Image (tube, rainbow, N blue to C red; front, side, top):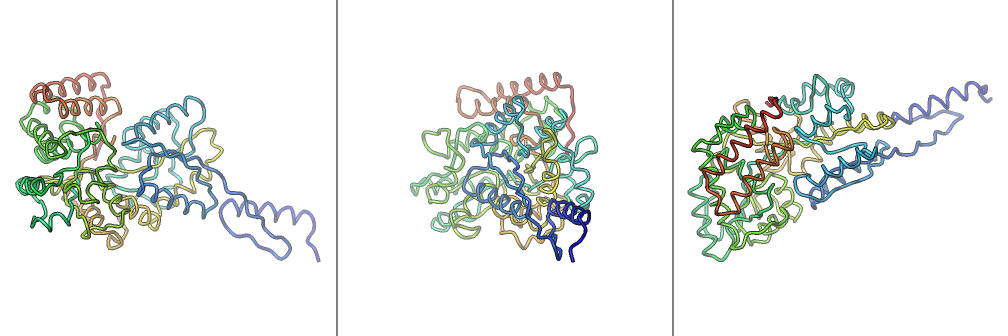
Length: 438
């Protein structure tokens, strides 16, 4: 016996609703037809082998809930090219549905009203108790959740070639004296002591670690959180600049701008012994078949023990015409789930933004980073170079001044300190804002 026509209509309507939610619908008289996957255009700058692996992992997981991740990966270190593409598309009225926006850049887009608020997603999944407070500060604006955190990177990471160190009888480098001895031994044996690039963002990544090593978290916060321009004139900043130049001399005789992946390759193929880079480099080494303790190992930059210089990967859902809101919210909920956090971060080199994961599921470098970030006594400081503490304009001028000093021997240390102080003072007055940071 068949149900009356109005009942069939009601059942079909109910089934369509359940399919949208990703639930099964069955009945004795109707066969549910799966709804076609909704396409979401995802803009990001994950283009290295390990980054692509992490992105493909996420793409496969969102496909399982009926979302078609249309990939727009933009090549370019530190996301500068991706930022330009983002601006162009928004101005043209074609914003991506999902974009990798981080730190202060994320806040700027949110202030323009272009970022979907995820308050209801966060409330339903109870994000707050399981999210690190420092991470929470970066995904909230005016009381609203504006992005989903994917993982935490440690920037002040020192990677070294375990094979070369063993061959030369060198101990793991825990202070600058040990680093210097290792560099001398590596050079004498015909190897490059330090994998180096003159690319501005890579130079600045090394500099901010040197700054922490010489001045600690207090000086770092004075400079970039409190915007105290006079702090640039201190002896600790002079030492950090000079150590940066010294580190550059330990690279090749003719330094050049090269992709960070080339530096990683030098370490992996036993051409270089040391590399300062965020822990995404550890993931890239792992993608070559190596692992911590086998071929390479990781520690923190000397002088930065107890300090975690970090950036946070975040995805923002763009408002557009709100036609994708349901799928965007479902995607956001999935990305912060414990299983996805672990799977993604194991491939990306970062660590989960959740407090409730089992660190035993991470490799040795990941366990050390996650535990460091978790400990109350750790000094957590947001990265300048990777957009976590200042706006794009201030970041660019500081990176530019530091890069100029590093590559141009005619630039004196004192003059560079004065230039940095002047730039910070001028741009802070212009913006007349005080950033919030943990």
